[in-house]
Amino acid sequence: MKTVKVIFRNGVFVPLEKIEIPEGTEGITVYLDSRKRDKKPSWWHQLDIEEKKKEALLEFSKKLAEKVAFVDIKVVAENEELEIFVIVLDEFESLKPVMETALSLYEDLGVYLPVQVISKRKLLRWKEQRNKVYDLIKKGVSIK
Image 1 (cartoon, rainbow, N blue to C red):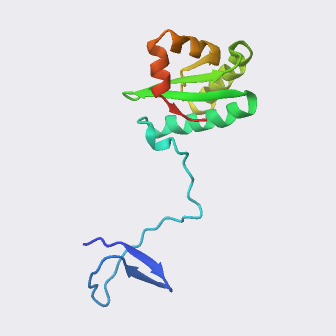
Image 2 (image 1 turned 120 degrees about the horizontal axis):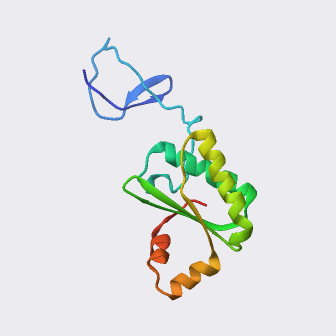
Image 3 (image 1 turned 135 degrees about the horizontal axis):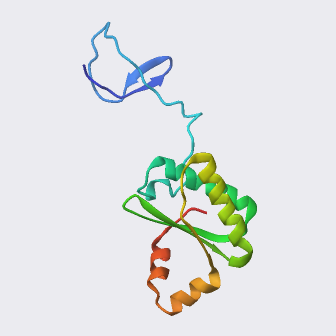
């Protein structure tokens, strides 16, 4: 059994490699319907975590955008663990809707998202103080 890449052109499968396929050869064709392919966000392949968590993060960012005006959402992922930082202008106003969104995703999908809500003001203060948490957040992947 051999594998060869082909392209469907003018009603015929044409090999992409220079190869002689004997007349009468049978084969199995597996293809991707590009019209139905889901577009993954640019950050998808930057995170080294399981697919279920990535899907939960995508849903979290979509739902959160409907409820809260945030500056950014940063994800820090190490060793299959993750930490989510939602950066907002007013952390007191945003805390409840952010946590409710994370809780509803946990109830719906069974994926726990460890979320912290941080004001932009506090983040800038950490930067001035050369706090390690600021460096950690800065290196995180933006999923907004």
